[in-house]
Amino acid sequence: MDIVIRAAIAFLFILFLTRIVGRRELNTLEPFDLILLVTIGDLVQQGVTQNDFSVTGAVLAVGTIAMLTVLFSYLPWRFRGLRPVLEGEPVILIEDGKVIEKNLRRHRLTHEEIAAEARHEQIAELEQIRWAVLETSGKISFIEKS
Image (cartoon, rainbow, N blue to C red; front, top):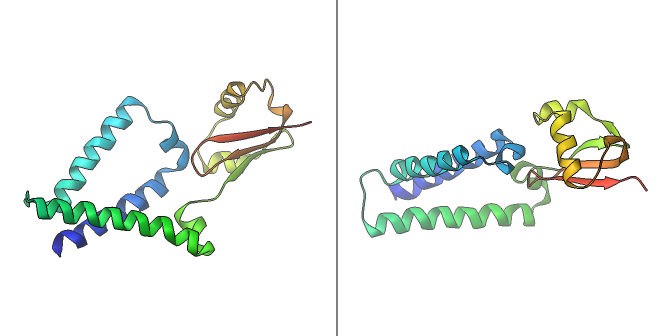
């Protein structure tokens, strides 16, 4: 039972950490970030199982994290009020060609990053954008003016 409690605490900590880090950072993983994630995974595993190298301990830890993953994907689907807390909400970055500075600062984005993403979508000028939305996945969606 000790492994199940430690796995649940690790799961909740990782969920909290990913919400704090922000969606933009999680969408733009560099090679160092990937290595860091693997290292964090190993550290979490050591904290969850401690010195228990048994198959039972591994099954309990992985099973607990899997069950919590399913639960935390079901809860926002079943209870709409939990969606903003567990999944986040899309954020408008540009409205009718005007950048919303407050939202850029809140998500640590620059004008240059928005412009670069717009160029990827074949949009030359920010003034051509009706809406730019930072999605919950970390990607930026653009809707051009007609």
